[in-house]
Image (tube, rainbow, N blue to C red; front, side):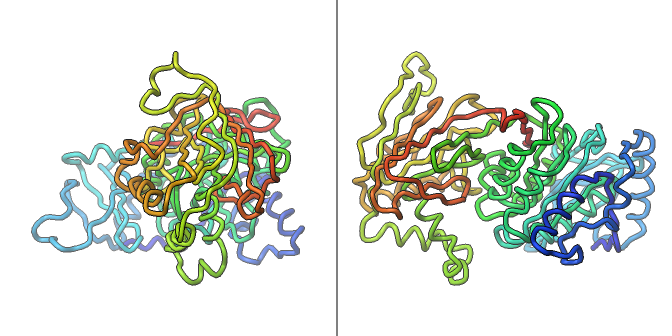
Length: 482
């Protein structure tokens, strides 16, 4: 196993330091409270960052690989093959590939052990399908833009902190990626930093988190007054460390190793987000999901401290059981879709029309541009965060379904989206949606926006659309995909 010792990684950006200092001052938090960001670790912020030349980067990587080679490595050979589990190693845990880099001396292959540690191999050639893991680190950030890593220790199973220290930090160290790291130990800290930092075009945020932090960052950026130009591009890379990881799963990055590899793929593409607007909600942006009914109720109940303590990662299942018995609630409201088509007629654009969907009673309404809300739960099988521009995928189920029927449809989503062929599963594609909430009981007027729960008023209309541009400055979000 590799021991990288005491690693110091610096940045030359001052805005993140200033934003965090203001955040801590507002809450009476001292800088030594362990938030992972201070002047000492970041170096002198007054110096303007200049990207090193290609020759300097190559020389740094050469010296870095030489220092790695002198350490205690678990496996070293003259060739790297994808066939890790041979007969000799049968039954042993197999490393998960992260990335492969071409070095002056040959190839360097990073992998992740079964216990979440970084391993590497050095070789002079590659074999088989290993080339699909090849990345060019020079293309990661050729502009020399600021790189900000946000890790959320409260997300999911608490993997973010060790993902940074054990995996991302040594990789960044080897590739000489200057960056700042912020440990998000305070609620809404990501939103505060994103809304107050003075970020230059193409700033890269690496989010070691779930969908909640992604939501905070996007909405924070939409309120940031410091962008000097319209359509400033900001790059976001999500490494799945949360509970659901809907965005990263929909981008085919279901594991931490895949998320780290995607970070270096240089495949940045514009992200369309959903705009959600109503009188009580104001304007918010949803990256993953808007829901009303069963889904919002389950998310609400699963977030209680009692459920987290009693059931941990199984709390969603327990909350779902509660809302299925003895019969699922029926949530009153009217759903109107613009230019809508119902599956399987998504390609019949000439048939698109505005329509009222279903009656006044619904058990399940979900609007998204993501196919998955979990790594293996494909609720909107044909959705794509980067595809179908200007379109929303809408899932609706009737309010008269019993517990067995509703749970059966939802469980089919674990079978690669098999529910798409169930007539009880209503699946639409539209350019916009309006939901008029008609439930009289307050606990049935909850809506979910990327995991955040809000209660709207009786009769309130919620408008949902999609856009590339967020906020008054029309900031553009770019994301990586494998």
